[in-house]
Length: 152
Image (tube, rainbow, N blue to C red; front, top):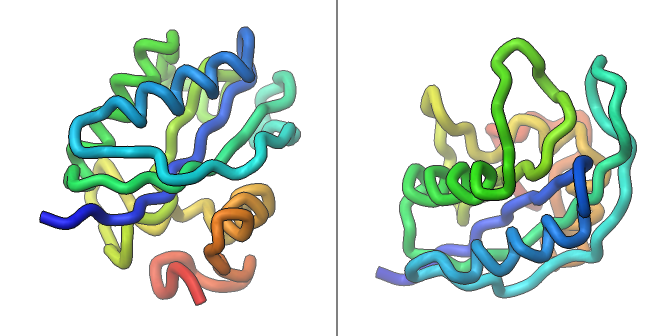
């Protein structure tokens, strides 16, 4: 099976944010049949949502993998947990040690209870679009539906 190019967004706004992103890159690169093929610059952004919290460090990774979308999601969730991430269903968009989002997965469209690809937030996160451009991907405009067209 040949590898697919996947774009994974990393974010952190608790603890040593830069170190957390570095460890996440290493952990993703160490996954079976997976390698980090590229990384955008790290940038600081203001948090999204109603919860008061500090700024995030964000970075987009280009990842080549033969893992399925669900297997990669499971691996990313394990990496988040290893970094101290605790998901609180009552607090959406709250502070977190690490967030790993699958933004694009090759040319695939995925819609399950666990995963939607392209990520529904892609069209509304300017920093993700900047980071994708650094990696050679021309992403959606803010008015486009991310489920209808991933890249131009």
